[in-house]
Length: 268
View 1: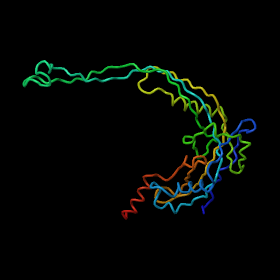
View 2: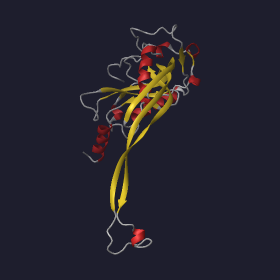
View 3: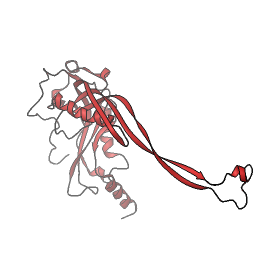
């Protein structure tokens, strides 16, 4: 059992979005509860990067939660002009073919000298890229899988048809305008020209923003063993209810965890 209970993941927010005004969607859970919870616990207890004394951690039972994410779809168009440095090796000296015959050098003829000739070439052009950016729709929530999840449009079902359990549903409080601003910055970085650019123009267009609830199997644990300093801390792992893969996690530092195993192995 955990000592002092961890705060519940599902808590009310002071400024919840009105789901009657926002068209909301959900992505159905594709794996069973037993599988999802088991993988979440295995992600804590197994692996070479876990501490040697991870068995002493206080692990909370894994639970299914529905996390709100904005699915922002857009595109980025970029035009750039720049210069690329070039280097070419140039050989100078006697003509071997003339002085020594085919493939032969006269005994006392000077060797060829190599020089590097540098220059510049223009580069640039136009590029277009489409993309979908997931954005966490709950401000300050400690678990953010947005970098590792894919929100396929074909997987979305209306929220009213999903029948999510209220006690497992995290209320959103990030408005669409804020999510779109965040997505614009990400799309702009994706389309930013690379290299030595003299001029660049990047235009971002947002075509669609949908609020959807994503299934996660979350397990948290309190650990204060060999791989941490300053007393026990709370860590977590989150497994996607769609793919069954870990999409967000925080664990004790890998270097300290491996170090603790090596010390035990060599009797340190």
